[in-house]
Image (cartoon, rainbow, N blue to C red; front, side):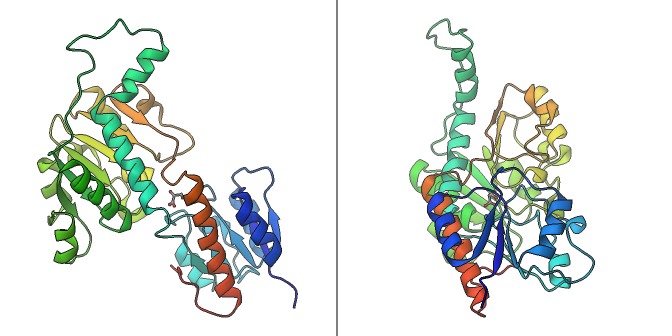
Length: 323
Ligand code: DGY
């Protein structure tokens, strides 16, 4: 039996690439650049499996009209809103993701962003690097205390819960949760959390709001001008989920008009391009999609994708099948 032919669309941690190479007939995108929808559509006719990342836009235009050679898209990442799962289902292509292994590190980064925003760390760093620091003074870059404040979490899946754990147990924060479905009260109790009915109920109550819901059409521009207007004037917005969840121009306007305290973003709607309206906002911390970027997690994600491939080609149900 020939080994399944697979395409890995970006460079992965070496140890996982070695395993993929041993077990499959593997091609790696050695240029390590995002593939275009045309390249992805052609790849679907040439490979048995494609291992894409968030940078591969697998929308309807990337799928061929008839059932392709590809049998599985084993995504390297938990979020899969860049993949048209309806088209995959229609053409009989399985889709898997890599949950759990990145929850800790993504929540760590969300907490990092929350602290950076509250303590004006981005502004301080920019000032130092520009050589503009004139020395300590009581009123210089005064931020907001975090301990004991109220954190609103939108989306209470694995990452949202890890964020709640850090905020509640580490910083004594009061946790409010908004989630599509009802969260088990014993789970809420673990984090001292209260579930509210809607985003509208949550926003006015919070000092900090952290987004942990999926991206895609269901949550596109969930945070827009109307909802930003419900936030307190000194509240902060944190996003480690997907860029499209926030209407970026509405956020930039709220920041420049001083209608919220600040924001911290790890993800952007048109990434890697940054909406120019955001780049001018002082009270904004920006990181280049680093949520899962630790050695341990990136290797864990690769191993999880590998487990999905192994199961699939052994004729079993892959553990993390999402379509
Ligand atoms: C994820 O796992 O969803 C990360 O954002 C990278 O895609």
